[in-house]
Length: 311
Image (cartoon, rainbow, N blue to C red; front, side, top):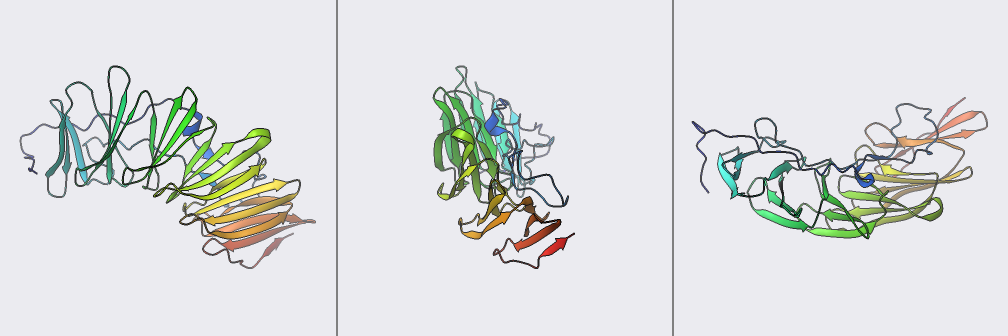
């Protein structure tokens, strides 16, 4: 490894953000189904959500990664990554033909380098942004959209194929841990250590699946019929599935680290379900005669807190 001489050297920030910009339904923001829950009664209650992935974060105007630990610049056909702590050049490679695009994970630990050749072949490389070692590389014979987790762990790739839409889950080590063809209207959301897929099925039903990012293992699998709600709490470490049939709703809460069920409760005449703004309390509002009943549960363990009634 050699050190870079800062004085007297011209440098430019790394080029452009990794994104295909196709706007496929899979990539868009995803929230609970629009028909559920009912209109909000308590405004501060946060609906369960499916936080969509982000395109890799581009270097800033100085070429720095989101955490400022890595500097990226392109000069004379060479892409260079420099560790700012000690000015060490950790990665350097010449790109004589294909212009590279560079982005980072939210936590700045991974640099993502993308090139597209003259026939449209996309090559994506995952590089350790602190040591310069290549973790993995993938080749796609056409456009693909890559997303990083807003919580910092894991990556997803979405690409259209003639036989359907392909979804790939890649962990922080660069390992492809899950791959499947899914419905183009599938909603995808990130938790702290999981990815949720809500895939529409026939006759108003949906398949809800919670995947562990590190291994690709399915932690939770639920079938839901509209109207339903599925999503994470604001902290991203709890996952809620609520399904309603006529006036009866089943509410299930899971821990995302291992898929363990924390709460399974039936509610009649549901009015609202969601979380407190930080996500530490699950709030279930129901109607009983002329009163609103507010049930509170700790998301830590599903333990019930004192009930409130509003006349």
